[in-house]
Length: 318
Ligand SMILES: Nc1ncnc2c1ncn2[C@@H]1O[C@H](COP(=O)(O)OP(=O)(O)OP(=O)(O)O)[C@@H](O)[C@H]1O
Ligand SMILES: [Mg+2]
Image 1 (tube, rainbow, N blue to C red):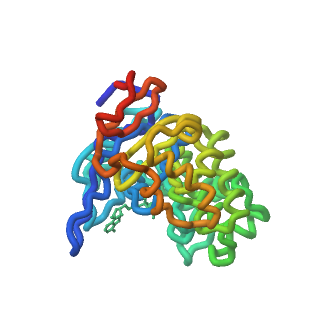
Image 2 (cartoon, rainbow, N blue to C red):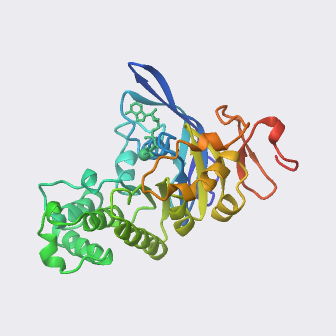
């Protein structure tokens, strides 16, 4: 494996197919980007661009009819040897250690992660017991501590309650607590606020940002909301139809987007006042540039990476 770098994840040439009755879909084509350690990397793109499939590859959650057909995801833990997540066997202990331990995930819908039949306290404590060799008492205490940190009060009583007794925002706080309780190196958030009311969305985003700063973990934040990107991210990856079109710092991508698609995405923001409105009209804004061919990424003079047809690559790019 490559030498130690400052990236906790390095995704290269990742390819995923879904074989369905209607044919083969290339959900990901040569997807590659880095997740720098201790930073927030946002993945943006319209519905169907491959954001969730990418996240699911990192957790190795791709199920038939889906299949990872190529590429690698190098995971470089803070301690220990780097390894390729894609090539791990299904029963490899490193995979079990990874899921919910070194890498954890917060999904859009809190009830995806929570069981309706166990108390909130039991579920958070169980997340600890799955990955660490501590007593039930210690796990319960740490669960209480984490739940307090995510802003849940009246803790002893609330821990004995069931998820259905909580509001949507409170449930997502519990999910965040569960995801962070083993102090993962990478926290993947897949549209964690889309299912919540606007005011609650802001609270959860602030919570994730504050905890990230406090705990120093690396966050991969999936969203189609560029407002959220501006608020939260250090690094931005723009995806379209299973491909990466532009990678740069939040400043580069939001202030001076290079790829016509990214420009279209930004230009469309005022029209996106309605929450959840699809971005599928963006393609009409990009003009003549071919955005369907998977042109390789080139690095521009300012360090960002963009996928462009050869005749549109600016001077100084490599
Ligand atoms: N279970 C599945 N069966 C068949 N095809 C799938 C499946 N899951 C994903 N795909 C394919 O992968 C593509 C990317 O899906 P993905 O869920 O990653 O999109 P996304 O960017 O997360 O979109 P959204 O913003 O709607 O969540 C889809 O357009 C679809 O073609
Ligand atoms: Mg998705």
